[in-house]
Image 1 (cartoon, one colour):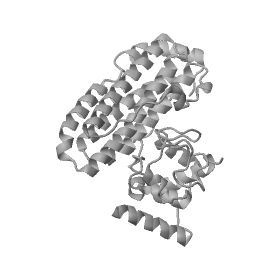
Image 2 (spheres, helix red, strand yellow):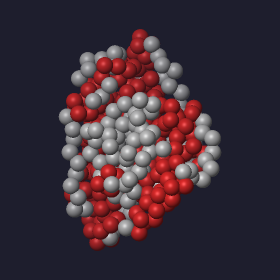
Image 3 (cartoon, one colour):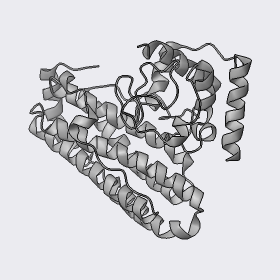
Image 4 (cartoon, helix red, strand yellow):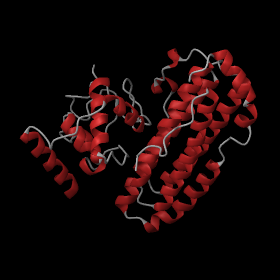
Length: 125
Length: 199
């Protein structure tokens, strides 16, 4: 519960501030390779173990039709952006305790930047 | 390198002994033993929170295994696979069935509810893109690579180290599937030292 609160407070701060800490520039090509780590559960175009990523940016978390989310994700209040993704990918289960996403995260800032750069291109509706 | 179907056929025939012989994964039996062994201890060694978290991880793994089983069924029923490759696919599917059975038993013993498999239609596989044997093998290789990465990303989260070991055993099995499928496709061996997370 405490971790959950801290995560949401940090998220709220970032959203109110309008921007997170400065992020590294992302490389789309490298990001596509890093996306392989996600492809056990996710695809761009279809729901699988995890929800599809198409239309990710600007979408409220827990809102892809037809996907059975955890209550924690549906109630997280997150709207996906480069900032919220960067925070989430550092530790999905720390930011949203109770999420079904059983993935340790992407600890390296540059890897996250590359992955987010790729997602910005690949998930456009 | 993506081989033309005819060239791939020749290559595959020459690799038959590898594909249907010692190359077949055998770690699934080890994984079963590890999973069954660990669940006997789990009830006394873990807190409720870590058990719940471990059940979540095991259920993600189970869902992946069910998806793999269904995908190999699509490949087996496609009519696109030559006999030795079909035998290989059915063998890999059998490994995934053993993984799934062990995972479901472990989840139940931890007090969880195993996820259920979906229908073939619910998986919504891109079957319209599977035109020949190479397409099927590449589709399977992609799923195996994804599964390897998923296990690599989930294993550090286990509260029970024995479960982490069992997960690593399954990861090893599915890495072999992935490597053999890449070999069958004529792809270059992986040129990275680490799979999944880079350390």
